[in-house]
Image 1: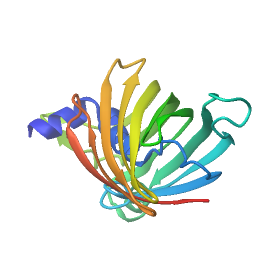
Image 2: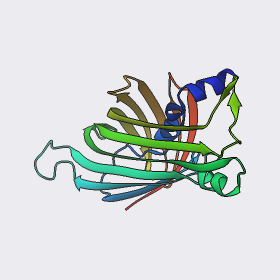
Image 3: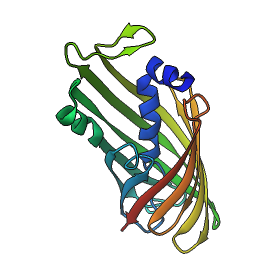
Image 4: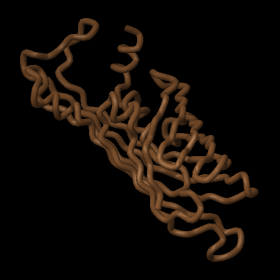
Amino acid sequence: MQIAGEIMANPAAFFYDFQQDLEATTPLPPGKRFGFQTSLFPTTIPMTYTNVSLKARLHGEGRIAPGVPQLDIVGGYWNMLAAKMATKDSASIDNAKFGGYYMGAIMSSSVSPRVRTFWGYKRSQLKARLDFKEGEQPEFLGTTINSFDTGFKDDFFIAGIETPKGIGKLWSIQLNYGLKTQTISSKVSWYGKIFELGLNIYPEGVLVVHPVWNFHLNF
């Protein structure tokens, strides 16, 4: 009941934490120009966030001049499949839309052959709307809920460090700071050639720890 109350108090923040799970905000590996990612858990399964993220390298480290960092642009989009299914099959839901996007830029620089730091900026937005049919509105804690229309938008500073552990494998630690919400989240990940396994930590979230499983390809 406590968790349900926290979700109803700020549904956008709850759903946005899952959006952060799918956001690809680490730099491309050295020598790669493009990247593709789709999040598998907990976004596609069980949250039904169909999603895609893309990365593109604008400048390789040291290409223009020695010491100039690598520059990548990142972005992505998602849509909740369950919202569309609920509208079609439910006797009480009249309309449901859940979706969001993000975009940003990441700079990265090698401190040593075994350590690379990165930092950057992203803007994230989420929109969530749910309308109930007349006479079918649910009640929560004695209050009739006709609909809710909410959203989330914030700008974030990103900083992190990564260290390779083999060809196409690395550990990454990342911190995000929301300028509007003044909240901090963190991520610890192991990256393989095609999969990422990690833990996202949201100290002020309803669910503080999110295990993450993502699929990616870099070219």
